[in-house]
Image (cartoon, rainbow, N blue to C red; front, top):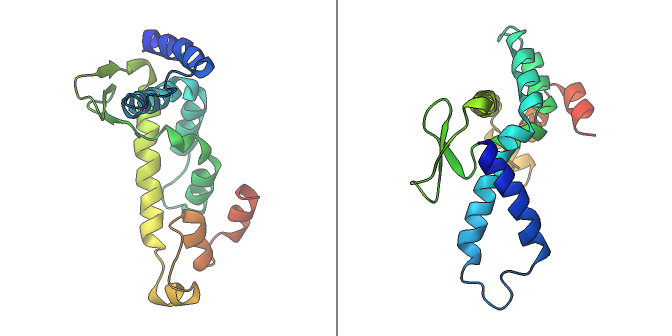
Length: 168
């Protein structure tokens, strides 16, 4: 993982300084898939300390405490982008690039980051499902409701102080 991380960071600077695709975009789509996937994998390392803190904080609460859970989800929303976009977790530490199944990377040093992605997304969708908008909510909103936890909780008037705290 460290070799890939260092290679990616170095080459990102070079590619960013040159116009590799000027006049010829046939390689852009493949390059962009690779860049996006590696960017997300490198975030596993970049956000590792924050993820470890988030997991430790989550261990300290009872799952019946929904208010704490909502607060935790909003607090760590920014680092949830570690989510498995661009790659698939094969094991608790191996990831495979989504667009090129032959590329498998050992992320064992950052498996807490992978675990965080799974735990965060599971808890997020659990609350999202619980507070899904009703038919009446859709009518109130003109037929469309933005699919976010903030919006769903607001429609049900749940945890307004938490939403205000984290959504300033």
